[in-house]
Length: 217
Image (cartoon, rainbow, N blue to C red):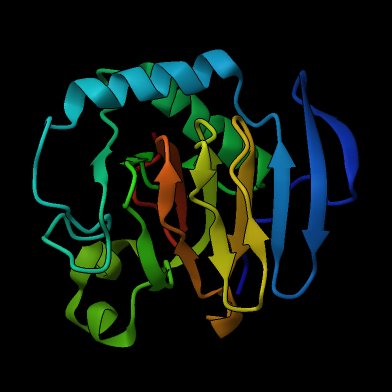
């Protein structure tokens, strides 16, 4: 199955479309890469401020996938409205190009805030067979998810790492992104958002679909 792949994979600094990026490290199997400088400090700030305008001050924690109450996820989240905040669309298209994937096969940014005590249990980002058979999450039209990028919008004072089942623990770094692909539904991609101990953790998820979920936009 075709899958997104960063334009460059070797560790070190790289140039792409007039911007400088760095690959801190990269794994071939499962396909995981940690890239720095995906976002500027100002872009991170703008995304946080935009999300604060949209996220209710207090509400029941919801699942990033369904918008319904979730016992495994605690935090505040929302899907970006690109018409209201064009930067979100710019970032989606820019990262799609960097990952060599059509931007019309990317979901809109999904922004989350984790406060102290918040986290996300071990999970996969793809939808399971029953969900796909039922057409949940528009899978009949757009297919399943095949890759993810977690964008770190700040650095919590303590906690909040992304932990993989294979023993990999990734600390958030503002502006960096964690890319991972799962064309064969590799179980080693099982990951969790560790509980934030102090401060806040802000992330934005970009999910890549098999088919066009955005009608060419």
